[in-house]
Image 1 (cartoon, rainbow, N blue to C red):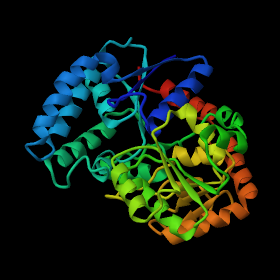
Image 2: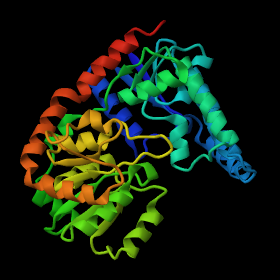
Image 3: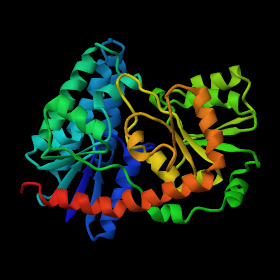
Image 4: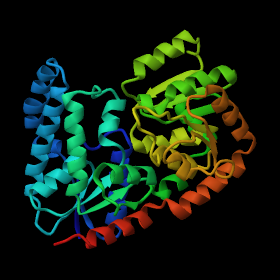
Length: 379
């Protein structure tokens, strides 16, 4: 089977969607399928920059988020052109609602994978302003994309309920995110990882997060006040970088917080191996709650205790007290207390978490389920 992953966003990029596509692609190829990833940039990079980026910046100055709408329309048109060149027998996996719209406009069946809340997430990362023309357009695209898809997979049950409420689709299959366990099996030792990264022998909290409001990294920084010996390793980048750096300076934590910036996925093994515990302190923003975070699954697979906010898809991954710990969102004291407590049960929590990932979040099992979905798409 020829399988085409389609997304209007650049690929690869830092974030869960890109990791999802890369991991699933490898698993599908191991099953003997031919896999291709198609994006506007892979199809027409120069046109994307000339027609999309420059005019969008000018239009954005007019207000109402017209520039963001323009750039997404350009991406939609370019992706449509790319998909039109694909052989008729290709099976299309749309990785966002605009890709599903592009496939439908060409009369091509597609499976839509929904990783989050298209409109709400644009609002939560401050890409859109509430009540703007941009928000209304994104909401229309979101409804249209859900209706355009022949089959839909959501990465957690809360997103499936959102799709039902938004479009009336009640036929959504829930497939939590997943990883390739070969990655976890090849983790270096804690000592080797710290030597490689130049880290000392302090308690290390790893926070592998994009620096956006909903990921709650500011809560992890604030939690350091409650654990004076610990160091915080923040691996990721994003719109909140400057705000977080200012918070670190204001609280006098420069010696205990390390910003690494975004790292390629293949480099992440050393960071997980070097950590004593992992913090995923997500917070609800603009109605958005964390889905089944790949960072959490990777942390569980690395046999490190994971402490996460008890919201959204995180509650579908972690059973509090058995394979990790859950805390209320936006509560630095509770987060610090749970992180410290996790070290006392590190082996027990870590082993239970790793066993769960092997049994329930395998990329190969997920790939087989996707193949079944794709085989049932209309011809």
